[in-house]
Length: 472
Image (cartoon, rainbow, N blue to C red; front, side, top):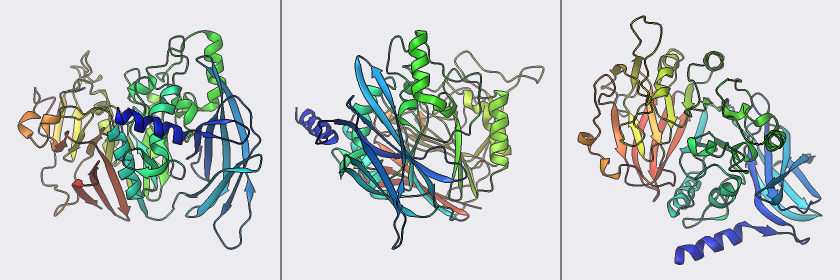
């Protein structure tokens, strides 16, 4: 009963009311926007059906500054017999490596007055990574609080942003109250999103609501995110289905974001990150996708190259073990010099040794072999000399599972017990796992400084229980 009371207080504090009686369903939060070369941000908020005379001003935090007025647009969402308004304000013409303030008002009354920083072009970054988070749990709140203490420049969410089906109503209940809380408190979360952009990836739970005849407010990922639109159009993207008029309205309200936002990439400091949809409907070797990945990384001069997607190809858990289809991309990523692959889906933390992988082909040598369950056998080469401390130059890609952001944990008895990690046959699994912690919720912190990268895993109590360095 106590937890329920806390949740009600949290929800009440999260929702706001203006002097005109308008209900603020989702307070304003920062998103990266379609920023690849030039820098910008997008401010998003959601209200009830009562229109408001909003104004967003923003300015560089400097002794002499010019105040700019953001262009505001909104769409009307009529979902589950309720009407809401989803607003966007484009903060354009921003300078890199700068601090800004945005000021949101309604009829002259201040709704939000917050600081935010733009992307850096320096050879340094600091960001947090976690997935499988939007479960509305106390552990989710604790992780959010600890992420806030780390002061990241941005957050990368490796999918399953909300449970159970990626619905608009679930975002408002299980996501925003925890990452856009009014204050930092280990019981309720932290005010991360008001000033720190979240880059989110599609997980399986994020697309369960794609049948809009059954879940009218499904695929809310495309409502609430505003991310780079530089990815490819692929034949195997998520498809919104249902009555023609409902699908048409969904496409109108998500505009160019659906389905374009399923795959994207961005630069932050000296890191280049490509985010991919890895759900069961995709083909990781889709020619359009592979061509885009190759071109995307080849034109990047970043010191560090990272790929992130939801479903891991390399995991030693029992849960979700058989779905390994993303292993097929390994040779491509190795050729492009990818350093890290960050995934979720499996609700624990796992770090692999550096490895290369050659997927098995059929007798003709022209097709990769994949079982009906999604298993991919092949040849492993493991760098057993790398330890992340005295030897910091890995030979191969390090694969991270960081799926313990808030949902229930998988295989908790596997923590630090290598004898339980084994799978058969040897063509499908070798001892590639270096660290496996599944008995506590946690998140990943990555910090780069020139040719040095440090990765550490921090638990919900703020204790770092794993750390490695990579140097070039």
